[in-house]
Image 1 (cartoon, rainbow, N blue to C red):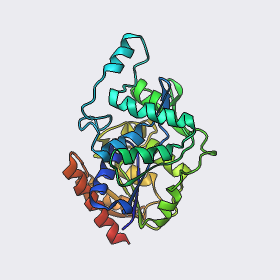
Image 2 (tube, rainbow, N blue to C red):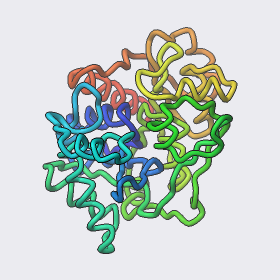
Image 3 (cartoon, rainbow, N blue to C red):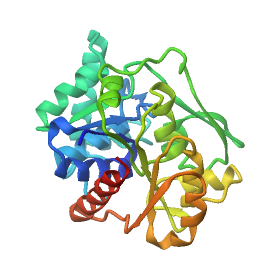
Image 4 (cartoon, rainbow, N blue to C red):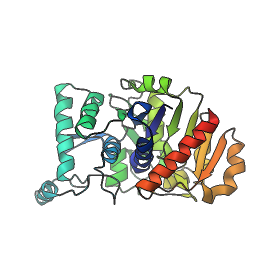
Length: 306
């Protein structure tokens, strides 16, 4: 079974990691959001891409889910002493990734080619693709601060401003990265990972729209809240009650199947009324065993849909 996973952030990386423990390399491609990519301290940073790569390589910080395990902060501490902007923390090992990516981008290499080489260096056998090689920053429209780039909103402002909406800058110029459309065309099923629908998955869908018979999504909202990240807060500020049902409605018309946590079992009938089949499970992925368990559930559910 060939699977394409759409991912962004820690939740997306967890499910992609679980799928990679089960599926052989030729049967899994993960397409990652790059709408939160930005430049900081003169470096090109791809937070979602790095989170997915570090996770699949076994290099991610197991506590935060992002950044590198056993990280040190010597450069950052010196930058802080010198008065540099330090609101976006960069560890010493992580800096090596950003330095080499930035050097190669300036040389003219594409983000997808660089990512492929990084994956080889880190021992990742499964394919990881950025959604696009073109700049397409996510812009968050807020009540208090106006329009902010995503990392400015997410990290610098700590998600405090009230959200009014989102847009993807230069989306009309962005093209899917090499391999993205081919992977989607050849897949037996598309899995939308439990990532923020607004700022992790929508950017991918904006640049590589899906026209596929089997698309399933796993809800990132459990019991009205997210495990990590601001998705539930965003829903509330957009005057939508955050729930698995709200996520299913977000993808209405796209999905053939929807997976949500068993604590939300009372929503089953309403979700199925949207025209999609459902599966309930324990969707928390607290460790590697949890990632594999949920990934197995996802694949079993897809089997019933094919």
